[in-house]
Length: 440
Image (cartoon, rainbow, N blue to C red; front, side, top):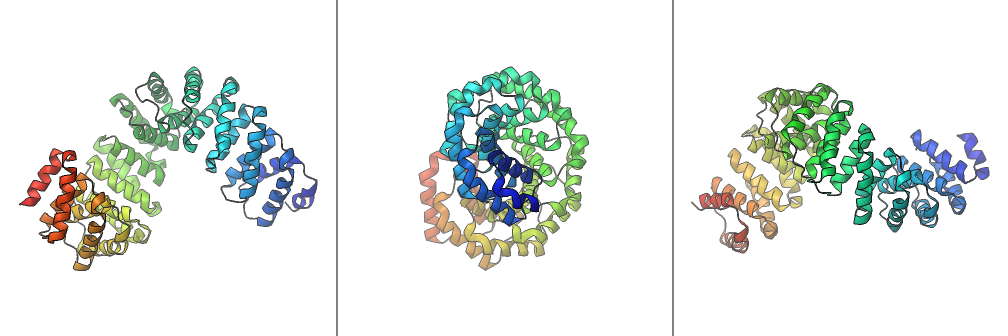
């Protein structure tokens, strides 16, 4: 590295790009002076970069994962626009990946899309899969004609796609909102089923989450096959994989057999210390939605972990945690509730309308009326955000007030009445029934 720093003034374009890529691949980010020297030399030489050097440099900057030099990134993206006609398939794929990773949603991405189409046939399967993923990441799926061409190319390559290419393509298509009823999506899912046994855990979970977000109606056969392949791999699930797997099952409203859920939750329990706040809350919320009743020991361990990580909880995390426990019919110990409600009171100004309604509903379901200061803080936010309440939020809140035997002040009651009248055509039968109960 010292030798490289001394000889930097002699480095030409491709040598600079290759050196930066090597540093990125080694994960070398600590030597700030060396990096700054490399960037300075690159800025001098950017106009002489060929297509390969430009794409390699952008790819390396993206791999470094740091906002190291905005000016260099800007100059390189300008060169992308100037030299696009010279880019081959590999260089286009690398550039799109880099720009997507750095979230540089600039006009050069739009230009890149125009250059990809005539070179589709030269793309290898991996390049295609990565590029499709990048269009989804950058939000550049507005060019319908190009997307159709890309999907036609995918259809032709489908039988030869490897597991990682299938996972990338599936994620991209699902994210782009492509029709879940299409023959391509059905064929892609079928191909995934055939290769599930060689999918890594992250690819398995990503694929299931992608299909879930896309609203794809998964057949029972797919879920049975998926769970059969997932079960032996559960011990190797990371905390991220556990949380997202549970989330997908919840969103699909799919309740696996008790033995599988027990194995999954045992793994969650063993890895609780490594869960971050979001994954912890997601897991508890998902278990509640699935409708599985965990053992009391599991819940106690989860509550201890929540208490330990409470300072990291967002407003939504607090509301979702209380809602999930109430949904499971579980009432935590008073000491735990007091600590959590102190956090609620502290962060209540950040609560959304849904967070407020969910918190009130959870407390009512548990039969726990918080101390006056906390309850008043909740009421203040309800007044401020009442216009944003959905029909379900209005129904849940009124039901909660009735259950907690709290009589609303006249002005707040009238505010609720006005919101109900305005949104009355949108109320569902269940929500109307809840308000009818509340009125008594």
